[in-house]
Length: 375
Image (cartoon, rainbow, N blue to C red; front, top):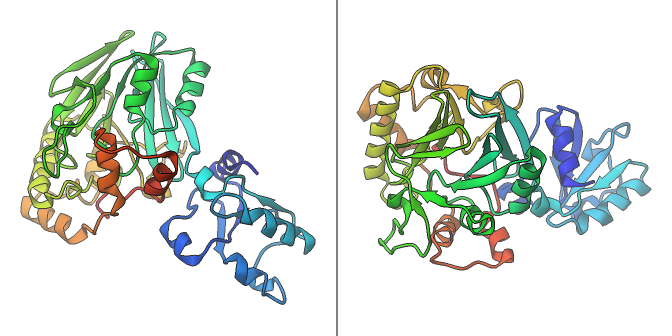
């Protein structure tokens, strides 16, 4: 079974029995959590082969079983073992490594100047990127490193790339923005405050076009306006389109806010985050649709499976965004901020061009769901 087909079944709400046969510590790091119909269980392969009966697995013999491991090798043996026992079993090709590369495109409603607003859902990480198309010109926002996913979508839309934007310098996944800009021969936009290491100030080794407060990017008939919303990073920006959409990056999520500690300056950046939230509450209309760069749970989805919400809904139901007292907000941030993964510093430096990673290293440092939200 291709991981894309598994994702589509789960996305449709179909019940899927998924058996994860990796070691318990690997399952604890990252596992499939996608879809309302997921029937998940984890038992290491070594334990399965020692069972005198498969009854402890609590698998329904009347339903297919998808078996997943790390890279799709051990799952083939386990799948054959289940088939020999009378189950209809399938091995997930490429395992969890392949699962983390799956991107599901979802169309949102167009705006007066945008014919296509596509949210690409990287289901293994809970990461969201966007392709915006106006009169055949496309802007790609917050792309991951799997550029073939974007090439396929642009071809299907009949769109030509015009620009690539990072709303901030990512720490949880390797950005594909610089590589995409070079491949497509288009400008790469980034706020200057995110173009250097937050740890020691070392300038990044990257070519970019500065995108600062009030700057605009025009393509087709559309215009994106940048609003500087520091806090998660010093250079975080929200992108406003047609006064209808706000691509908020990791500044604001449907049910949380971006953690301010990933640059090692949690208390100072939490103050910036509060100021950015205050500004949004003052200036953003309630009907503005918030399109974040991440999500943490199925509950953040709308009925059409997109991750989005009107700003007035976010301001009322997002615990952090609903706080009206600065001291309460700062205390809540401090109380709910956990230690970030060690790999996030490596990813940040790689995105700045200050470190080179092989494909194997890239897979290792990206492994697991995003932890960029305050939980």
